[in-house]
Length: 248
Image (cartoon, rainbow, N blue to C red; front, side, top):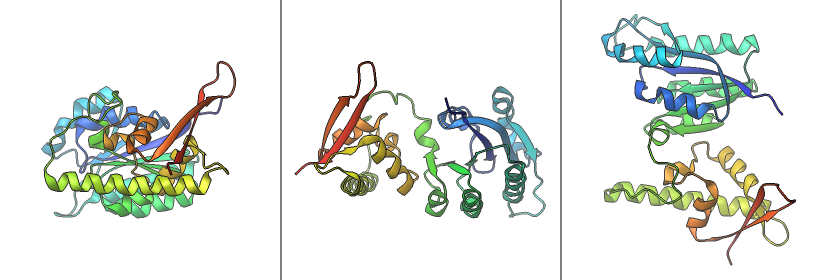
């Protein structure tokens, strides 16, 4: 069994609410183990007082960074310096940067250049450049939602503008999946679902079936209505292997 990836979790307290901390650590456990858990902010600021219990309960180390100049974010610099120090220790294989701030885009790029696996987490307001700089990006609102185990989309009242945006995103994902299937299919047009999912994440780091109300990739693919899906058992007792191809 391969050893789990070791991660340094670095959280920007100025851009993240304490309500997400448990969800952040639970989500990261899918990728590896958190070796470093640090959060950065000016802890003399009463606005960050609500973090105290969350940090104690989840064994997260607060790093003090005074706001030297009004209107300037000193937290960013402290996180970046610490990230580079941790990188050069050689004790981790990945970083989890939790922030909705585009200022960490260059840091994510630099860490990936050094061979690190970079997971980003932030709210849906996170700028695209930071998302694209990560190997994988997860929206905090999505992982914090309850009742994600069901296979069907959660009913949701949406205004016209939000619904149109969701439909546009769904159409883009559908076209991406079609393209990936065509590029990786056999002579009969079938492609391995695991391969499709891996490539999709590489091309769109913020892709997550939970963004569309699903908990698994297979039912999400089936809901699109434009793919044939089949499963095969290679040998008795083994997990089923799922394939899909574009419908004619």
